[in-house]
Image (cartoon, rainbow, N blue to C red; front, side):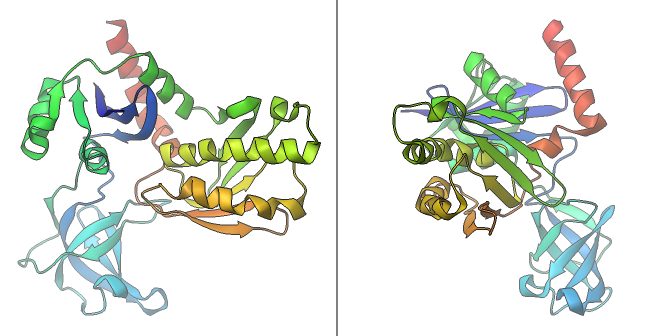
Length: 307
């Protein structure tokens, strides 16, 4: 089964998806005018050391980032020029997380090189996939990196559009008639599962609840990855008493194992909530879809479609 990385361009935004026979494997949003900065290499200036945080703040163009001692900050003194790479995008009013990127010439803070685009990231994640974009200018921009892998084609079809639409809403249909609702908060992401019609089979209720959850967990894990949910994630599985829920631990671990960010299943809380910790690197999709900037891009896309 062939994988294609598809890049759908609209004013100010590129929606990128890895698709296999109409099934979405990965999704990302790239805004060339406002990139998240992950992978960028910059010249910064070392500033305030924070012993309690085991690191140092680094002045960057228009913002400050944090360089942990474990990533090269221990050797810096105040005012020293340092080459850094952004390893985690800014979040919650905090600057980006940094790693040392080698010596640089003296000078003011400056961007030295951009990190990979979302198209390049998904192409690297699926090295055998062809890459198709509906904008010849984007193809020309990425040709030096992707070579003959990238070409021009119409990429928006019903499968891609329906897959993107599903990611923009909190409610999720699961196999067998079960449902889930996804609710990000500033502290964590809560996922509530409801077995619904999935437990209506003619079998004992505990067995039906177990079967419904086992069938649904791969789809839950897929949407954690597609929506790029990160940080602390709590899952309230459908039905099942608290004492029986630990039996689902192997299924959680198996469902998460193909995620490139290697999320960790931490077990169940005293209330029976499954705990998952997924590293944050790029902003999650729900953050990208909020705010006036996202609303403006959506309006521009609607105008282009109408035209």
